[in-house]
Image (cartoon, rainbow, N blue to C red; front, top):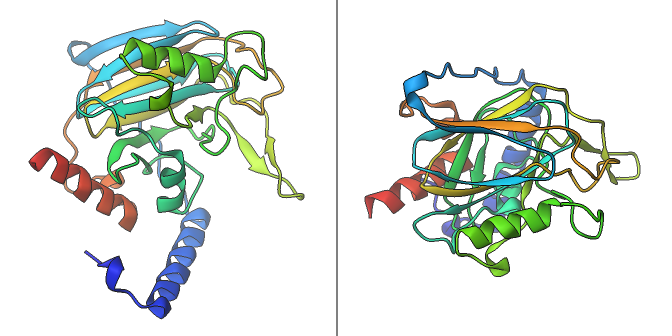
Length: 260
């Protein structure tokens, strides 16, 4: 593993330029196929449908999988998670984007904690777009139920407080940058859009059926559903564990946590 602390400024620059070139090459390459797993009835842990404006609290064991489906094309779903064994470790939106040199979170990408460990992997995705820069809506945008308050309410059910909540990711939220370098909503996701995550640690999860902050509609327009199940163990050549150098380093940190 490369020791970043021993690099010279010139080596840092060379590494930066190489990573930028890799990011451009990945953006131009064919996207990984969204291969959704078949789920055996006996492997199902929990499943339900979340009405507009509501949320759920989930506990996922390491290795469990979670499929979230946008049934009707509602504009977003707020998602946040904590390490169940040590809740001071939580999802980190900034590191998830920065460490992987991308804001395009789709098949093969991982979601990092603020301790440099991988909390979850994106094992399959229909490509509707997921945003972790701006994220879900807030009380300032709607008098109804909103993503920020729902995530805080979910945290409270885990015995946590507002200080334990950081910026969340908004699933099914296609945003882009316009000619003025401003982030804009690119239209609602299609009905049936889905994303599949694999828990890489024991997790506490908050999932809220509430819109993205940039959506013209600030009330959810339909239901989302989820199904959690016991998934097969990741193999040595697993896409998410090997997709980027940064992901591989994150998994070394994660594996070390469990080894300790």
